[in-house]
Image 1 (cartoon, rainbow over the protein chains, first blue to last red):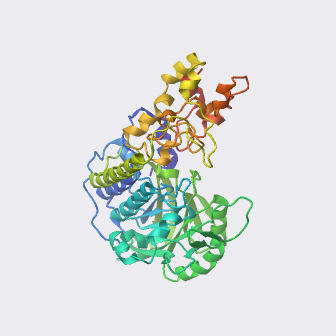
Image 2 (image 1 turned 135 degrees about the horizontal axis):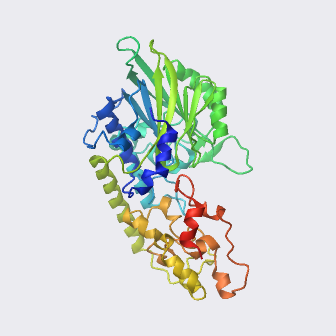
Image 3 (image 1 turned 45 degrees about the horizontal axis):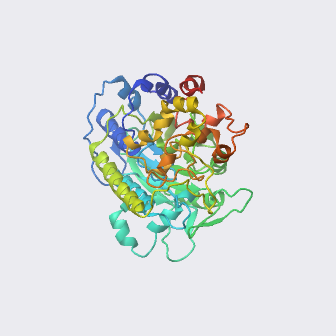
Length: 93
Length: 403
């Protein structure tokens, strides 16, 4: 399990050297869920229609991907959350 | 593992400039949020006072069924303490219920999860009214509402997630007063926090502004299937995980329509040959960088080579040059009589001298000492703050623009 501090510390090290491409919040929320599905057996909760999109491809052994996804440590369910997008589907700049 | 996706509030823009109605381009932005959240199976979004101008449009009874058919997510916009004031609007649902199957516990054991929404009223300075009338809706006291709605919800579900658009102290009170809440996910621009708090039985976490970091709250169950503990973390949303092609299509289509709306505005807004008037018709106090350069050549040369001088290009690369959420930190004098748009006031694009030193038109006409002091680094923090610029370090940044 990667805690928030470790994840946040990344921005001060390696990520500052990575050219920033798109940082589309919604896309990444979806991609993140899809990644969980591929690596950890994630499934949608009941009451939601549609199939899980599995069209995202990436190297699951990439340490940075592992950092983002965290490990499947036996949690019962997860709640992904955000707020204050104020009409913008992606973050600024 | 089962996942839920929620938005704790302020998902729609309420930017109305000087007009009463939401302009076309803002409606377009908001429409794509409803569509995007629906397409990607968001489970619920909490309505806040910020959202009401657009939510009012969505909840109009006239054409409601057809609208819901087109955008089913409308039925997942929740609020327990926002109700319409008159008959022309449908009421939002107070909560939604989701059901998951636990891996632990008896085979096939299910957990029913209720997601309920609360919003503070619009902050009104010294006005201590408990209720507000806003865009045809009433925002009642969230604490009183919670006392009524949560016991009712608890009878239907095993686990309650409260989405709360309010300051942390109010969220703490909500959790303290209501033992039914298991998780409280809060939001209110820039209120995120690294570590969750625990009040009563609730775990309190806060969302990052603009969802620049995605919150992930993991909930653990004991061997008998009862809930054990909760662990929160934030996942940075950067390029590490690639874009989802289908989601990229949605965002590209949204940008295209939004840009078309802006072009319509441009056709009716001639380029200004002088500083834009402020609201109320007062002349702009800004002069523009070209005026500054006449006397401050050396300083201007430093600025020209800085990223401040090319701040708008950063937005243009992402086709965000019309996005009000982003513009304020990439121009001079936005909504203060300076930059309005690239069409009408291109002379105020980029972070110019006056964005830090203050409006300089008067100084340019009467160049006496005393103008332009910048209290650093506080003066930089309006834009270079968490989470806009988490790497900001004044000692590192200042030499790049020292003048």
